[in-house]
Length: 100
Image 1: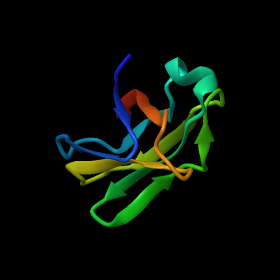
Image 2 (image 1 turned 135 degrees about the vertical axis):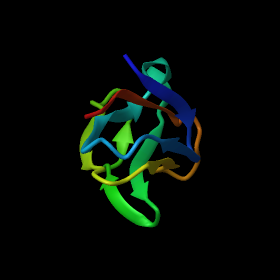
Image 3 (image 1 turned 180 degrees about the horizontal axis):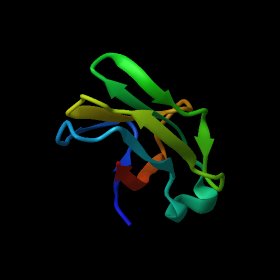
Image 4 (image 1 turned 60 degrees about the horizontal axis):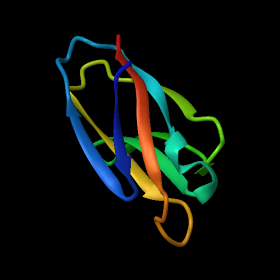
């Protein structure tokens, strides 16, 4: 499996060859947070254009799946923001990342 672990608020820049058509995967709260809370919103940006935005994701809930078009693109920005008042326990994972 492929992915990144991070914490809110974060920004990860990824680059790739222009030969792909879709970027897919899931984002969610890391299982290690469990009962400590945590609440995030995940976004995928192409420059300033939002290609994907998750609903608020809380600890213990299913990760948000995504699939975005990347034809002709060579980079994206993966954003994780806190969805609550603080970023306590806002440990996020981008998982099952795949370029096709």
